[in-house]
Length: 197
Ligand code: BGC
Ligand code: CA
Image 1 (cartoon, rainbow, N blue to C red):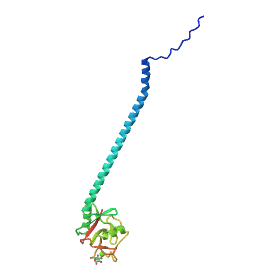
Image 2 (image 1 turned 180 degrees about the horizontal axis):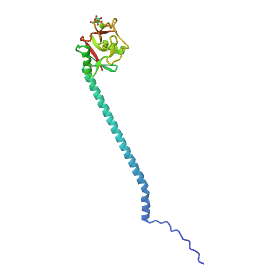
Image 3 (image 1 turned 135 degrees about the vertical axis):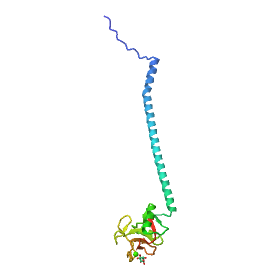
Image 4 (image 1 turned 30 degrees about the horizontal axis):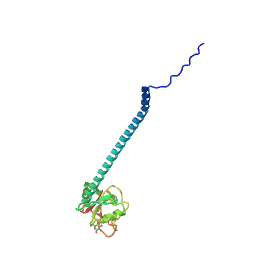
């Protein structure tokens, strides 16, 4: 009996074309990885550009706001406003009644001064002459209120004031050596004033 022939495996002997095919297939994952990396870098690039652009816009807006603030400050100081502890103050150059003075301040985006600290009182004292402040008892005699409706808690009445001499319902500060220099005065009298904003 004839011995069955063992089927020999064909020796791996690739043709040149087969070789090139395998080698080029080897590059496929690398091409994908490379393309993926490229996309990631591009996305990062775009993200950073947007981030920088946003930051840039923010800085420009802040710069413009500061410029505007500086212009406002320049304008206020040339108009005679003085800055003190968070507020702007203006001493008027014309004498008016209390309500006319209030209107004068309001037209400037302010109101008559409200004094609510010793420091502010010391500051208000530095303005010369008799000046209206935002204080009155026009609603109820003897109940002194500021122009924002609040009651007076720390007062700086001159000794003997308020005395309602004649009929006095509006408050003034007057230039005096003593710190306590408030006086009640007839609202229709003409005085300078101090505005605050
Ligand atoms: C009084 C004040 C008063 C003022 C009126 C002063 O002599 O001391 O209380 O408001 O006169 O002009
Ligand atoms: Ca008085």
